[in-house]
Image 1 (cartoon, helix red, strand yellow):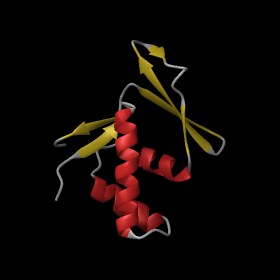
Image 2 (cartoon, rainbow, N blue to C red):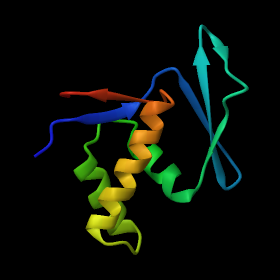
Image 3 (tube, rainbow, N blue to C red):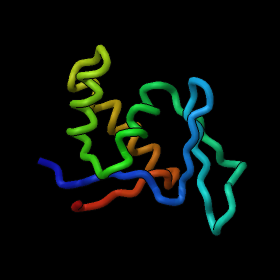
Length: 97
């Protein structure tokens, strides 16, 4: 079992506007308005779960249970989402909870 956990970056503000979730990173107490990100429904569901530390396995299991996707595809999708979010510094990677 993997002991890597992911959680939302504390310096990222998220708001639900209509059917979309919008992310705005805050750097040095200023919203980075040139780096606003909009999440689709599945990505927003994953973002909501990242309020508390989560593993890839836990996120993939919840994704597979909620949507019509196989567990291997859910794991692949979650890994891709987390990699992108980490590269944008919108999630933090932790080795333990």
